[in-house]
Amino acid sequence: MLVKTLNSGVAAAVILAGCASTSENIEAAYVSPIQYENYSCRQIGEEASRVSSRLAQAAGVQDQQAEADAGNTAISLILFWPALFFIKGDKANAQELARLKGEFEALEQVSGQKNCGIVFRAAPIEEPETET
Image 1 (cartoon, rainbow, N blue to C red):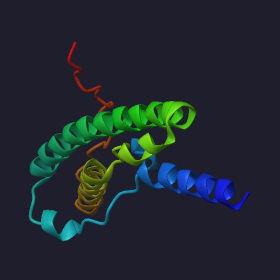
Image 2: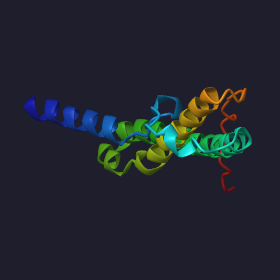
Image 3: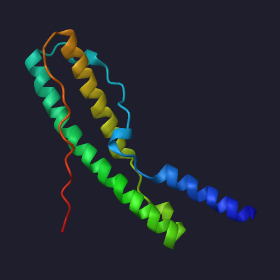
């Protein structure tokens, strides 16, 4: 009984630690708005557009990874639980996504301070191209 409980606990820990988070569940990392203080409103708009585009790409990759991990987790639990140790997770892309979200927020903050009148909307999430 103890072994069964221990195996269930290990499997649950691996599932929680290894699965990629969806893009919406990743919080923005703090990025200081000071780096954008000397930007003109036009430069802020251009940089926000660049960051938004890259953010949409990173979010698409993150969501694709989360979906793949969820499917692999379900299959692994049913067929072969040791395969859970090979689920990729989301470390590098999640860090980039958090940084980009932070940059976007910092740009929005500086834009507001300068009364630029820029409307900030994140670009729609881009689905990564898959090989067929």
